[in-house]
Every structure is written in C-alpha cells, then in structure tokens.
Length: 102
Image (cartoon, rainbow, N blue to C red):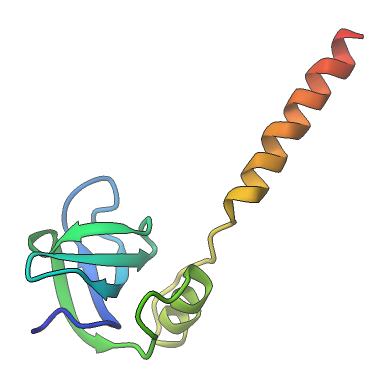
C-alpha cells in the first residue's frame, strides 16, 4: 500500500488544502490519520497526494514528533500548542473581564 506510516502527502481538499502532512496511522484501505501542517485528523486517501518522501515516525506519533521529522525532511512546520494553553488563554480573558467589572 502506498499510504504507510510516515508517508509525506499534500492535502488536496478542505480547509487544509495545499498543506503538507504525514500519515501517522493507517485505518483501512480508504482512510488514514494525518498530522503536520494540517490538523490531526482522519482523512480519506482520495483527498491526499502521496509524495516520494517517507519520514521515520512511529505509528500514532504525537504532533511534536511529526513536526520535527517533517522539518528535518525539508518541509516547514511548526509545533501546535496543546489544548491546555488554549484553556489558559480563555481563563485569562475571563479574569480580565471580571477584574474590569469590579
């Protein structure tokens, strides 16, 4: 199968179109899990253009491992922040609003 763990692809459809990603998990013949410049998600293989490069990552690798491997392979990516940092931003906005109203 051409879609193997570590295969670098370009996303063809959706809001992540024209961004590079890597296969992190093969679900079945029609679907894979991807991560990289795109959001980590289940993706139909018909929405992906496989490239010649294969990076060395383990199955289910986290975002930082994928980003590091893609950067080493020459694809510009940045590590995504965790959900906990988003929650901290929301908390700080709430704290600011409550202190302004006092």
